[in-house]
Image (tube, rainbow, N blue to C red; front, side, top):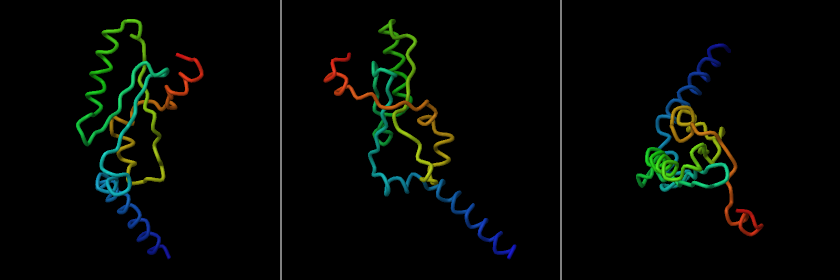
Amino acid sequence: MKRKQIRISILFIALLILSNAFSGYINVFSDGLFNTYLYQTENAEFEFTAIPSKGRDIGMMERQFSNFKKNSPEYKGLKLFRTFKREPLKFWNWYLYLTNGMYQYEYHEKVDLESRKSHGET
């Protein structure tokens, strides 16, 4: 009985390690090739859509956000948020969730500019 538990545990750990090592390939099949990730400030004064497969990565976003704050001093204290959640059931992404810079930003609900405009908000 104990031997069976050890084998199952080893198999489970091996599955986790291998799936996280090949998560890029798994994500292509499960989510598609051109995933987009939206980042916004709290009231959507600044937005950036990251498309890592096309070179629009976190580094580009941080440079643009820095330039935005430099050119608009009234927004100097803005903080950037990711608008997409981590999905714990996608166990093959666990390593990315812990180490990739795109997930290190705090989560905030997406601000829908169209609905704000239709309700008379700015």
